Image (cartoon, rainbow, N blue to C red; front, side):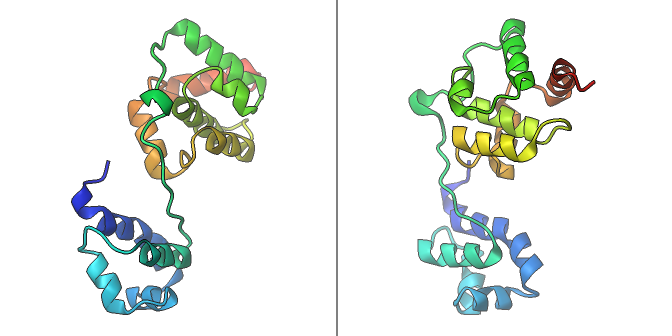
Length: 173
């Protein structure tokens, strides 16, 4: 979670690589957003700023500002238990090819299931776009690198173990 004292600066820093890909300089980025160059320079050191300013910088950089819930309703982000039986049910779900959010929500907390869908979206043999749409339906923002990285840190699922088993179960071995 970001420290409150650096939120604006952190967001500008996260957008900078995308902005550099579109504009040669920070001055070009600021100009495209309709801001003085000095405003962008100050934002790199500030804790807060006007949301319209951040929105303008994000828009021209090709980024989106997204509010992501810290936890699911009731505070649950991960399943209460993760054992072989539960893992087996998740493998069956992954192998089924079903991408109905209602079905997936029935298997666990939205954040957890959304991360599982993002993981499958990156695996050979699973339809990337379908699983990314499912993931976003389960937990908005999960497909962003920062949120998925948080999922990977917290999740009891280990991709190196789960993905080969899911591929075998789906008949892709």
